[in-house]
Amino acid sequence: MSALESTVPELVIEAGHSEKHYWLDLWRYRELFYILSWRDIKVRYKQTAIGAAWSIIRPLLTMIIFTIIYGKLAHFAKDEIVPYAITVYAAMLPWQFFANALAEASNSLIGNSNLITKIYFPRMIIPASSVIVSFVDFGISALLMILLMAWYHFLPPVQVLLLPVFVIMTFLASFGTSLYITALNVKYRDFRYIIPFIVQFGLYISPVGFKSSKVPEQWRLLYSLNPMVGVIDGFRWCIVGEPIYLPGFLASCAVIIFFCIIGIRYFRKTEKTFADNI
Image (tube, rainbow, N blue to C red):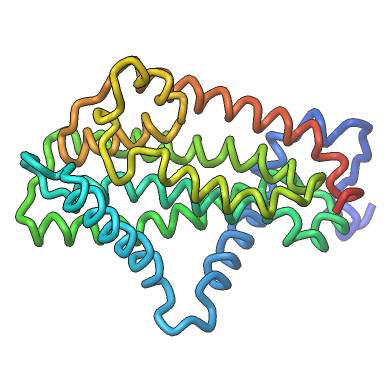
């Protein structure tokens, strides 16, 4: 055997290889994950006048509107010690992450149809890269929170050190829901019209402009079945010291885990048909 032949990698064709080694393949194709994520980051704000500043402007404008409506007109800011703008923006951070991830990931498979129909790779990489791009936007938006605290001379409580835990919760809530929705969107294209409505509706039924403590006690546990309720309450607990309603928080955690399991199982179940349906 020549030296050249000894360096040629051996190709083994094995039935069911992609099923048995799927999770290992996610690691093997990590470079593709980086490429897709970086491509989406560059494309998102390409040919825009202010670029990544939109990551700050959108939540900032929403925060100002909600502060006026709920804080001034609805008098929810009455007797508040913490500036209401910080209270609202503490909720805007995880909500924007979730909403952007859901909107971007829902169309990610269809947007990469040429790639899906030509080569094999774990399809889960595509929606995952969209969620990561939303995480980058989240990091940029978080800079405004630091500026708001400096503007109002507000010092967060010590539990702010636990904020990464709730960031992970936000990521899981976004990832699990996105997997399920993007798989449905491949088969039922009507979901491209439903997603904006879900995001808009979810903004008003989630405790973004108001605190979840405003919900009547008898309905609060049921209200916490919205997974973003527990996440938002966790962010507010870390940033402004707002107490957490523990039963509701545990209910939100259970729903997040449920959607992660359902999302992954449904995505894996329908993944084989993506190339045909697209």
